[in-house]
Image (cartoon, rainbow, N blue to C red):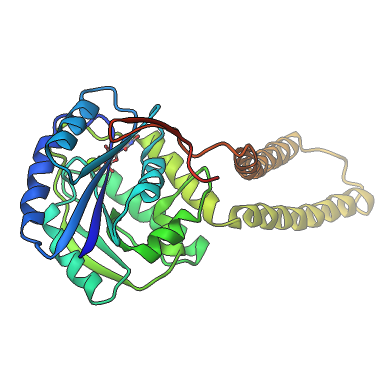
Length: 317
Ligand code: UDP
Ligand code: MG
């Protein structure tokens, strides 16, 4: 019998875990021809999430869990999950019931038809402000242009991945992860299904604009070095203009004996160039920072517990 793993990253979701488990159980009860595993990754929750997961594990042998030594973030929780799932396919879903479990049968159906990556695309973005919608749309457009890898818009991490895709993702061990880009990067045959994303059932989102901005930066800097090129291009353009301007000033003062004047123009030039230089330095710094983080060769995560067993696992390096 084929086995399907549900991978659910959990960070402080005590309010939704029971209803999530109930909804999932109802859906998978009808899928008699498959074995299921539900792998919870407790991402260092500070509330009762872990004890609820343990209770579910006691009651239902399909429930497995790993627990982190601290909060590492959802991206890391996902790679740890990929390392630990045992299924022939994995379905990644959020713990807050925003990803409706009733899409699971459809995903499996397409998987059986031969697709390796069946992803759920949001038809609507209910419960989100227009600002979030707009910024997200703009971000995808930019990322798309810069990376030249087709990145699916309005798509989260809710998807089914075949074992071959999981193994490919497991080979990507970078520390600063932008998993959504990786799903695109690895390729494989993809199938889109549309769904209406529900608002969060309970609790609150762990995202704020600062975190989203950082993720966006992550997305760009981990998939393309194009910003470095923008810095060079701006440098070249500015240099060309400065040479022209320099010639104009030289000619004016040498031929027309026009005395030096122009504190304002000097100030503007200095400030403008200073700004361009700082931005360029910042861009370079982003990449140097990434090199720094990768060269430390730290483990991606630290797992302290697997199904009631105390373990210390930092994963493959
Ligand atoms: N999550 C996690 N670690 C974190 C933040 C979030 O494992 O540091 C999990 C969270 O429990 C949920 C999923 O990632 O299952 C999505 O989080 P959230 O609902 O806050 O994000 P949103 O749906 O608003 O994008
Ligand atoms: Mg959510």
